[in-house]
Length: 165
Image 1 (cartoon, helix red, strand yellow):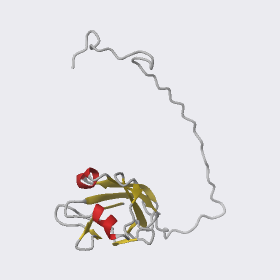
Image 2 (cartoon, rainbow, N blue to C red):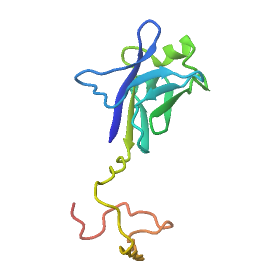
Image 3 (cartoon, rainbow, N blue to C red):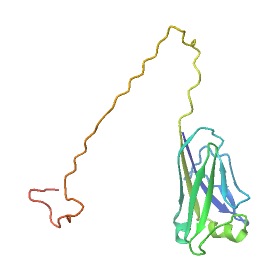
Image 4 (tube, one colour):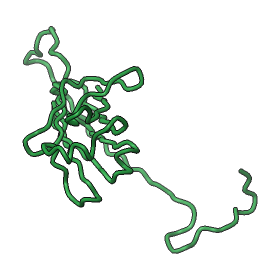
């Protein structure tokens, strides 16, 4: 399952909002808000394990020197913003810091991949005492052969003889 959303800080108070329209879709996000510690809080009420989280700043925030990173649990992402010009973490409870990440063209793009939910219990009967289970362990050995220059050899500036693109 995927949670994905564009989030923008807009309006007179530069509050976080889900930015969704025909060009910006949002899936599985329930709410966005600001935590007491000044981080952005994204609630997605899913409950399944998270495999990866990605938070991307758009070109507007990048040009302002703003970076963002996410930390996730099973139903939330906490996003922390860093201002490289001010050399400090932003506190989104402060209007001036929200203004640094806000505006009509400033977005963050949130992308979360969740593990598949556990299977639902089947309606079949439980195994009886006469059922046996066999476990097999197999070891696989793989050999990787590399060709080309070693770390100490420079790459040739001309293609090798016989090379045709």
